[in-house]
Image 1 (tube, rainbow, N blue to C red):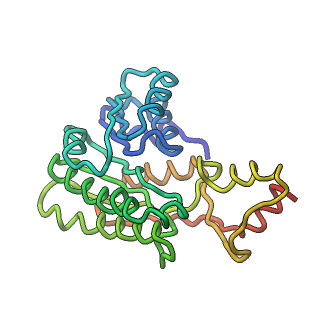
Image 2: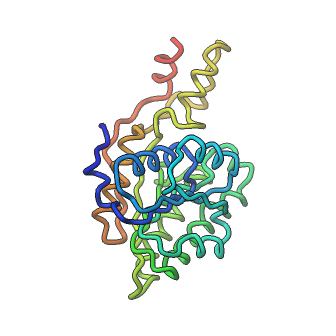
Length: 249
């Protein structure tokens, strides 16, 4: 669906920080927030300086702030979270095969990073934090899914860990964002010219969500959360073999 100003209006006058803010989700979320609301400031917290430069030059809005940093660095997060009203935690390592070969890196970013987010938010009194998760966190068969399962558990537990302090944590768990960078649709489109589409298992299915839907879900979570929820949208599923046949018959 088309995103509207009324969906973003609760951000008016507020300060929002997005970890992994130069990713597919982060970029679109931030552009919409700046365009459709009177948000006081939007902070990008991410590692890639070049993507930040590109984002800065293409958006040109003095409410956009760019913080270089890694979620593995707790002290940097604490500084970035100072005075922030809402945090959307979108930073993650998420390429399944890459993480099978680099398991320690997956744990450092996806698990320890989640813990750092929670500690920084509690210490800085951030009222609401929403973490992005994945359907792969359910009965995980790969390390990526296992790290996201851990992250979900940490974020839910963060609410009791905060005790009487202000910070509240919730999770949105959704599927593959259609056409996002590093996802299967651009890969299949690229491979089409080779005449061979790589599929690991013909039984493989994926859940699908549009970028707009994922943003609506996050906005709904930020607006209505009380802490501890895992929001799971009802979204369609598709066999990868069917997707391949559509893209490259």
